[in-house]
Length: 68
Image 1 (spheres, one colour):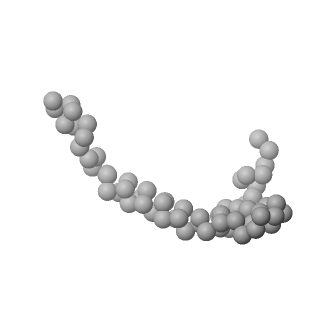
Image 2: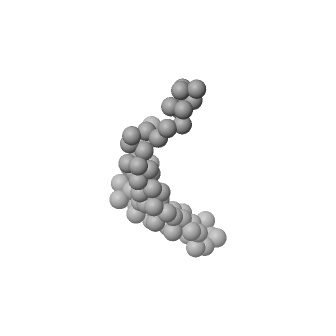
Image 3: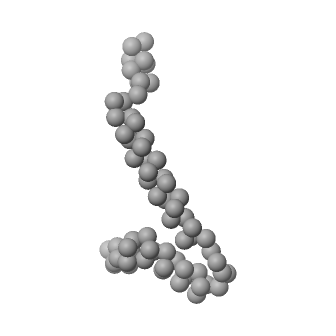
């Protein structure tokens, strides 16, 4: 019975972890607006995606375009 009780207790750093995850989710929510497709033309979509990546990654596209 004690093992089951311990399993469902909150860890000591629960509130800190929860605040961190909340911050990450709020940051993602702010950035979602750049993913709204403004056109159905493939070139326009690609340009919008490129701009979104530049905005999100701070201009360092090497993180996603470099070959592995």
